[in-house]
Image 1 (cartoon, rainbow, N blue to C red):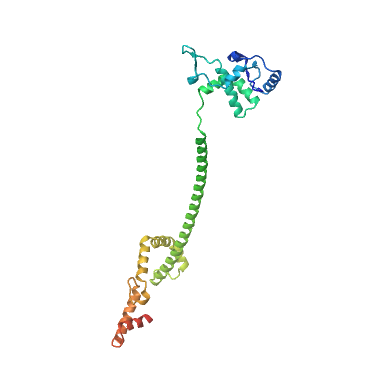
Image 2: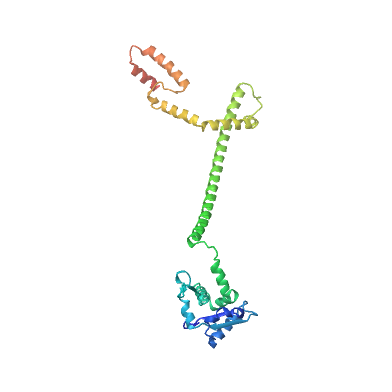
Length: 287
C-alpha cells in the first residue's frame, strides 16, 4: 500500500493465517483498486477474497529476522518463544521479492490469490535447483563456441574436399598425358617390330591399348612421385653438379660416357706428345 501500508490479500479460507496481525479494514481507494485488478484476473473468478491492512507492529516486524536460530526469543526459563509474526514476515518478503523482479500490482494479486503464502512456504522449503549465472553464461558461451567450431569445421572440410578434387583432377590429366606418350611409343616400337598391322593407324592403336596405357601411366606416376625417385634425382643432381667442367661424373648418361671415352682415346693418339692432360681435356670439352 501507499505510505508504508501493508495489506493482506488472499482467499477467504486463508484469512485466519494473518488475523493476529490484522489492523482491520482498508481505505476505500485501495479497495476499489483491488477490485479493479481482481476483475482482470482469471484466478479471482468465482473466488471469495478477503483483504485487510496489517497493524503497525506487524509492519515493523517485517523488517526484522525470523525468530529462529541465533535470533530465537526465549523466556526466563530458556524456553523458545514462538514467533507470532513469522507469517507476516514471510508475507512481506514475498511481496518484496515480487516487486524487486518487476511484478505489477495485478501480477502480485495473481500470485497472492493463486499460490498465496502457502505456495511461498513450499517454495522456500523446497527451492528448485538452479545453475548459477556463471554456469549458465558459460554453458551458453560453450554452445555458441560449439556452433562456431562446427561452422569452421564444415568450411575446412569443404576446402579440403575442393583441394582434393583439384588434386585428383591434376593427377588424372598428368596420367592421361603419360598414357598418351606410352601408347605413342608402343605404337612406334611395335610398328618397327612388325607387331602392328600397317592398316592400323596411330589413333586406332592408342584407342585399342588405352586401358593398358592408363595402368602403365599410373604406375609411372606413382614412381616419379615416390620418395625413392626423388632420392635418385637428388643424387643425380648432386653428382652432376659442376659436370660442365668435367669429362666424366657419377650418374652421367651411358651413351655420353661412351662417346667421350672414344674421343679421349682418339685425341690422346693424335696429341699425346704435344699437349698436357689439362689441354686435352679442354679440347674434348669444347667439342
